[in-house]
Length: 211
Image (tube, rainbow, N blue to C red; front, side, top):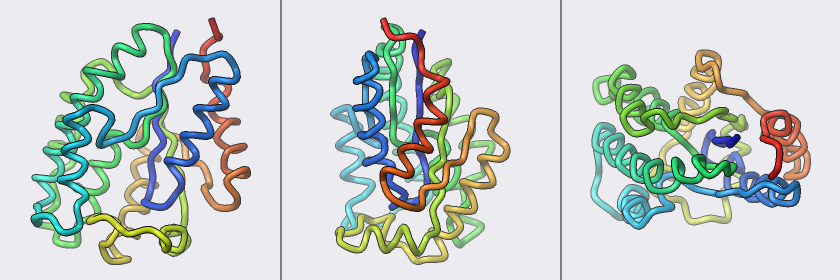
């Protein structure tokens, strides 16, 4: 058996640090784990990541963003996720199709620029094929707390957007989490240790038996 687990949520919610901690914990428990990030993890994905997140880069419409994020996702699933799962490994990924639904379909202030959710869902299905996440954990955090956590970092193009955008992102994740059967919301406030304990309580019952 294998497991495809995704951590998602607002910028600054702690996806990367929590995914790293969770990866180390699962390895200690005897699992073979592949830790991935979207966009990225493949040569094409990393190139698209630089293009998408460069604050000084060219402006893009939400549709262009959605297509590029989906292209990176499709390559990651084909090259890394599906082969790892076929070998019975645990895949822990930062972000998935849910982010595209939120960031490009719900959060843009200009309603006319929002990409229709049915189109984004179809793009997600095409990118993942039969390799859909077994569980998506949305790390929920107040946007002001998330922004404070990112204060020491140089924000990328999306992180630098106005507060209202990030508030719509948070609301979008919570709304979709209520609709998606394989979504779980975890409170991302408090210390890294607190959040990790909450995550492990969700993930432990999902882990396959170690080889």
